[in-house]
Length: 182
Image 1 (cartoon, rainbow, N blue to C red):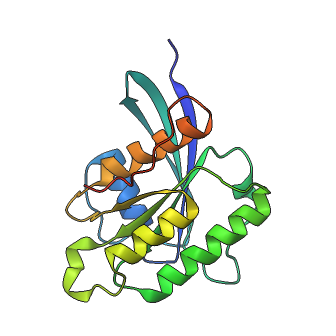
Image 2 (image 1 turned 90 degrees about the vertical axis):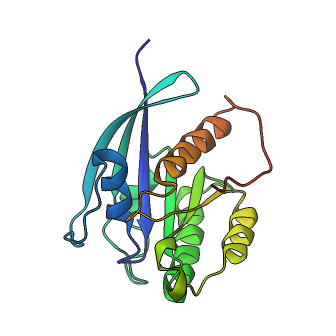
C-alpha cells in the first residue's frame, strides 16, 4: 500500500526552535545554529498505527507581526504545528496571532494543529506555564505537547500527535478529549 502524503507547516515566532525540532525529528541531531531567513522543506517516512506516511515538513522562516501568515501556507497543507518557546511571552502571544490569522485565511472554524511549547530544558527561564499552554490548546481543540529539541524530548510525540490530529479531522480516527503530554 502506498504511503499517505501529509504536508505540515511549522510556524511560530523567530528563534522558538522550529528548525531544531524538524532537524531533530528528521535527522536525529540537534543543530545549534541554523539560518533563520530561509524556508526549507524536509521529508521523513513515518509509521503510525500501521499506516505509512510520507511527511513533508515545511519550516516556515520565523514570523513577526508584519508577515504573520503568508497566503501560500493556506493551501495544500494538512496540518499546522504552532511553536512557542516556554521562555518567551512574546512567542506565546505571536503564536496566538498566527492561529487567528490561520483561521481567517483558511476560512475554517478548525484546522488540524498541535500547539508546542519548546525549550523545556530551559525550565529555570520558564515564563509560560504548562497550564497556560494546555488551556490555549483546549481553546483551539488542538493537541498540546511540550518539547526540548536539544534533548530530543517528546519531538517524535509532537509529530505523531500532528498526524493523529490530521487523521481525526479526516474522520479516520475517533475523537478524543485528552491532551497528549509525555
